[in-house]
Image 1 (cartoon, rainbow, N blue to C red):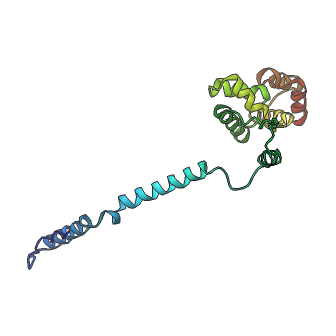
Image 2: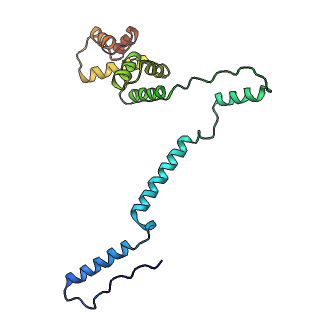
Image 3: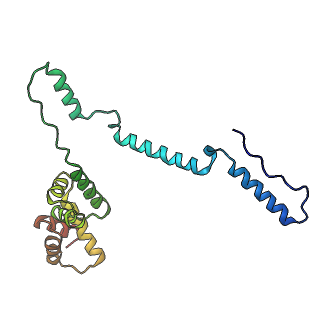
Length: 194
C-alpha cells in the first residue's frame, strides 16, 4: 500500500507567517501518516493492557510456587493413602469471599485507625461497611490482636484529643462507648496513667 504524497510546497514564501504555517502543516502530515503502532495512543493502550494482563496473571496464577503446610499435609495424605477410601482431614476454613473481604477491611481499620475493641470492630464492619454480622464476626475472630493493646491505644487517643478524664470516666468511655471489656478498659486507663 503506497502512502499519499505530501502537498506540494510553494517555492517561496513572502512572509514568516506563511513559512510557519507550511512547517506546521508538514509536521501534522508526518504525524498523521505514521503507522498506527507508532502513535502515542496505541503505545499507551498497549502498556495499560500489558499491566492488566500481568496483574490478572499474578492474581489467578495460584500462588508463588511455594506450598503451605496444609497443602503438603493434604498431598502426603493423598499419596500415602494407597487408594484407600479413608476420609482426609478437612481443609482449614478459608471463608467466603465476603468473609475474607471483611477480614481485610478489619485489618485496614486496625492498621490505619487502631483503638478498636472486638465488638466495636464487628459493629464498625456491620453498620459502617454493610457486612453481615456472621461475616464480620468470622473476620474479627480470626485476627491476631491484643485487645488490651487496642484499649490502651484508644485511651491514648482520648487523652490526646479530649483530655480531662478521670480513671472511672475513661473506663466508662471505653466500656460503654467503645465496647471494650471491663478488664481491657482498666488496662487502657492504666496505660495512660489513670
